[in-house]
Image (tube, rainbow, N blue to C red; front, side, top):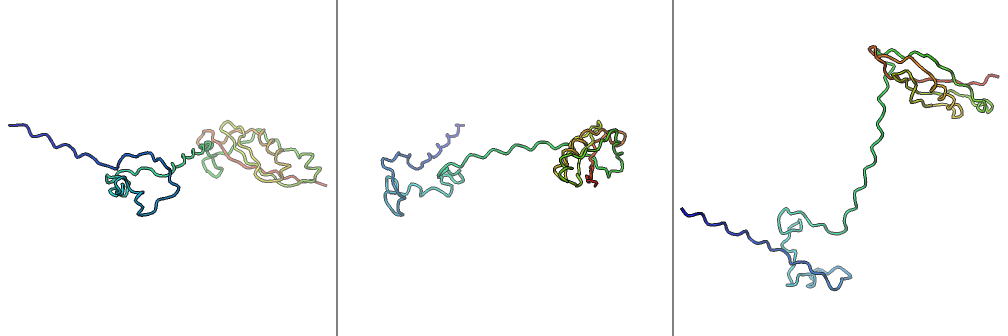
Length: 180
């Protein structure tokens, strides 16, 4: 048997005429129906284009107008948060036992200025019994530094859960009153 005839050649794509650099730059948009807006033969060069701006259905549209601005860089990722401290309300946690807890001294400048109040300090007792993440959360500014320094020097036997040392969040309050 004779081999089948070769398939007919694919139809050749015809599209708009190649772009030609203009010799004069127009100052305004052409008016609708203006023959100078049409192609060289007077026909609309885009008459066969579909909504995508191409002769082929579904073809991607060519960009028009100015290029979009470059994407803004993503903000840096936030620093990782420390592991959450074990809450004192858990029944299976034995709280830390103080080994040394020196109270804060009343700053002489604050006492002389008549500053009184209660300072609240939050801190974490680590698995090794050291104090970390010390910060004053309430109270007169003049008294806070003394309280933070005192709590940072404290040492504990660590809190335990199921016999293992665990982190433990705690709060301390220091009242400052001038006695007359």
